[in-house]
Image (cartoon, rainbow, N blue to C red; front, side, top):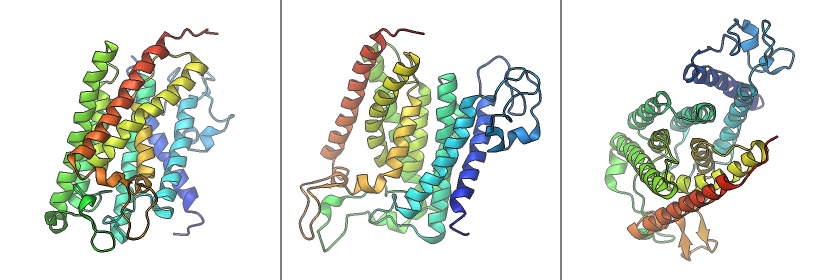
Length: 349
């Protein structure tokens, strides 16, 4: 395929995926009357075929209902444009900048292509979860349960879709001589490894989020995380493994603080769903995985072991406890700020 046209093809593909997500989200709505994408959401009149074509339906003179003159919801247009942009950005990060290429995990050829498709499925599910959560304040099982099945089955059948192995211990590596310790059974049984890696990510993602849900209920006196957030992180873990869950949970509160503050200032809304921040944090970790995993301080010098290395924390219990404690502390900070945030009076226009 000509690389000159590839960004455009990816953008159009993403826009079409965004269109299909819009149709899917409409069918999952809690409104009394469900309008498919082929019908106007206001009056129910049939929408002409060419008004469903991405790019064409974004034009101002094209996106009005011929019966009630209602405009196409801006959120739907924005979702299609952002999905197309996301597809292009992820390809650039994964293929050009090799954001997922770390020592001991370097798929190539056909397996690299399958991993890209596998992760594009995850991106689509994240877009759907974000859209429905902003719209209905819930993440239905129709998204997360099939997502978990795809994550586990894909990892098991392919055997080499992981962004990092189930267990990699860099504490046993000797600079310049040997690499990290990886159990031999992982190398010998790729399909069993894919199954165990994905299932472990699912359990850790869902289990930690469930625990954070209990903590948030105690601190706020009400549930700040829904069951949809728990199943969402279980789904993410089935695609990315357990190691990625910890930085995602660490970054999600930061995304929540930033976006929540901006939304409060601009709209005056005091309640925002947490799912989109988990999705945003997932995208950040996915597209910066290589730099996160290889982060060292001070900068690595040949033959000199770094004083601090993130990947070494994943090799022992104390390191994992440190990462988990930081993530929990970030969540507690967010919940305290959330209480203050909701108490600030806002003058509504």
